[in-house]
Length: 198
Image (cartoon, rainbow, N blue to C red; front, side, top):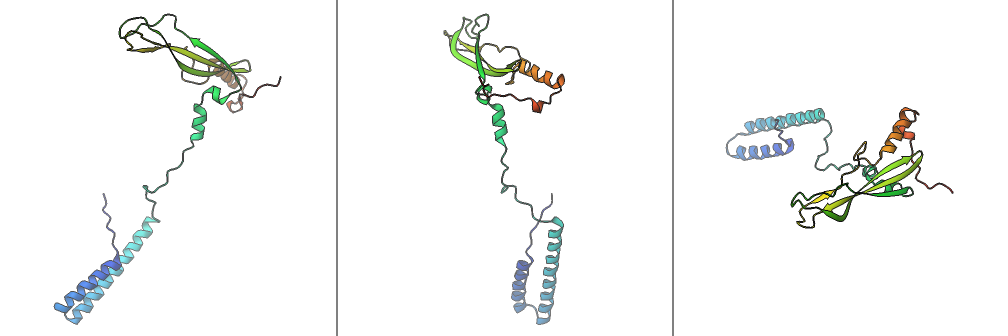
């Protein structure tokens, strides 16, 4: 690691002059004082030249990273992509279904049968029938134990091509067929969410 010492030649020169003046009154004769004074002046000039060369070599000073203004990230694109389909496309038909398991779950804490809690895990996927778009909202029932209140169990979600996607299987298949069979670029695949004229 390099240690950089900052030197101000003018300040050092002034300090040296004061020391020479103090010493010259007590110890040195006038010839020695002028010789010492010119030596100090030469040293100050050399230091000035060296500092100028170093400044040219390093180039203009870089801004301090602590004072650097952070760039504003474009959060707009991220916010739009994380919205639920019913928010992105408010004019589309909304179909809602409640998903219940075939067998009521058993509490893992006390082994008694659980009851419906009235709460849901909500997920939405954009689906399509041949060129008719709609939103499929799935409400998966949450179960809780009315005896020990020790656990909550969710109804498992229905299987999907991409489990965490906002796009349903029918839409994914339609996009893939449009791209690879009909050779339509994905950039041109658009969903018109405005209502059709009657």
